[in-house]
Image 1 (cartoon, rainbow, N blue to C red):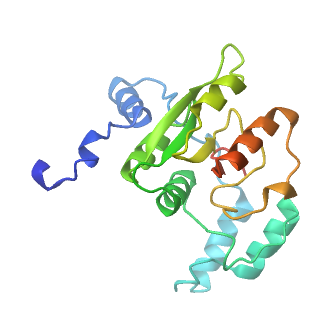
Image 2 (tube, rainbow, N blue to C red):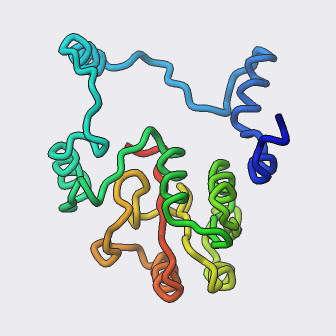
Amino acid sequence: MEAKLSRVSQTLTPSPIQELSHLAQRCGAINLAEGFPDFPAPPHVKEAAISAINADLNQYRHVQGICDLLAATMRQNYGLEVNPLTDVVICCGQSEAFAAAIFATINQGDEVLLFDPAYETYESCIALAGGIPVYVPLDPPYWTLNVDKLMKSFTSRTKAVVLNRLVQKKLIDIGTVLTIQLEKFSVRKNFRPLLELAAKWTALLLQTKYMSI
């Protein structure tokens, strides 16, 4: 079977989160690796699901979702006027959205800057796309961004910069808005160098909000 697998797939390592979850289950320990709700779903959410089932809403919708609802949500939550058919991609969670964005934009040999520490799935997705993850360490104890380190990390092969939860600001919201004009956003002063560097090297800015609503 191993001979049937691609070379890049054989370089991937198991998810530490999953390994810790399996270990916790095996040892009967409290699982601190994943976030599990300790409360039931709200009644109105259950009722909406039951209503959809009873109404026989069991057919495929447009791949872009309910366009009018998407446009209204983007307007209400982000103050953006978007075309749901061209500006928004609906995905099942952050990991799928990140993978889709990387596969859509990264070519063989492209470099993708990651702020370290970063979410574990980023490196695997970039590797599967043929890209090269380049880590930019954040300075402890407050995990601040060192602009000098960032500047030295950009090269002619830099295709994208991923803003994870520790350094994020409204730039490009993976799974929500992939194509957006950066000047529409108000960015804090400490992100100005990042914007300038991205513009200089024509790099994409990708933001992940896997714990946000």
